[in-house]
Image 1 (spheres, rainbow, N blue to C red):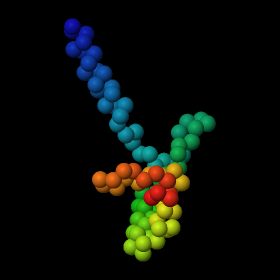
Image 2 (cartoon, one colour):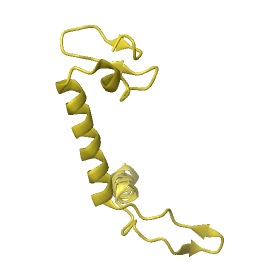
Image 3 (cartoon, rainbow, N blue to C red):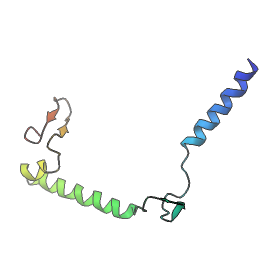
Length: 93
C-alpha cells in the first residue's frame, strides 16, 4: 500500500513534466550531431495568412460567388451547418 502512495505522485509528476513545453521551439541550430531542429515559424506571418484567407472567404460569401466559396474546400471536404445534415464534397457544399 505504501508503494502505491509513493508511486502514484511520481507518475503524476512525470506525466505532467512530459506534457510541458520544451522551452524555446524557435531555434534552428543543430540540436545534436546529425540532427537539425525544425525551422522557426513566424507567428505574425501565420496570422497574416489566416486573416487574408478569412477576408477572401468573406468576400466570396458576400458576393454569393459559389465557385470562389467552394474553392476553399477540399474535393472531399465537408461542411456542417447548424440543424442540417452534413454536406459532403464541393458540389454539395
